[in-house]
Image (cartoon, rainbow, N blue to C red):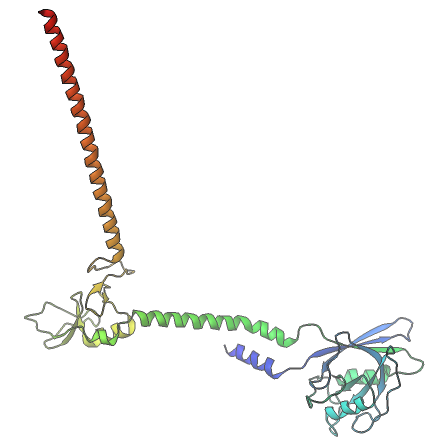
Length: 346
């Protein structure tokens, strides 16, 4: 959870976007390409998705804190013009980029004057200025030394927005499993809490359970199975509907905070004072009245047994009737044969 919160804070607090500067040097025998990592400014226009291609000019002055030279005039299909500035405490990034905008440049490149560390340049978000990127001091000095535009050199610069995933996206993806685990843990905790609350006995139902003062001559109880202590005279005992008795200080927290069942026989305790059996892992169950499922099963079994008995009775009646008819037919046949024989003898 802590890592997820830190990741979300980093993603929300750091909003800079990386970009690439591709230098194409054509004045050599074989064209060479140099890739420079940069970061877009948080103000001004964004780099177009197709990028910008053009020539690089050195800022004059290099810090860009005052009026700079104008960019050469270009037509719509001509390469763009970029200007290179050096970071300086004399003026802000916004002032440098605004000076380049007034000089009709298409983009500004500002390099760090202290280290190769790059970061997002902060400024007025409402400033309508050209795109600007920030690079390290080593790359800035290399551009200043080797790739500033000259008449006899043909060196192009292409500035593209970085289409690869930002590192904050990787942090977000890495923190997602922790967030999912936290949500699962929270859901499990809530589920267990609801299960425990639903299975506990309400306090108003607890008050309806009788409390007696133990009398060894009258009561047959021996000991409390929770604290394993023998009952003493005048001890306050809570008697459950299953006729098991406990010390009130032992059974009340169990019923209110653990489960609303008897710890000994696992019988549920209800508001009306009746118990209902509950399955237990130990297999020790006490039944006080059948459950609806058992009742339905018994009723269905009774109907089936009655139907079977009636069917058997009808079947037996049919067999008796067939036997009677067969016997009667045999008797009639015998009488007929005997009569015929007597007639012949006469």
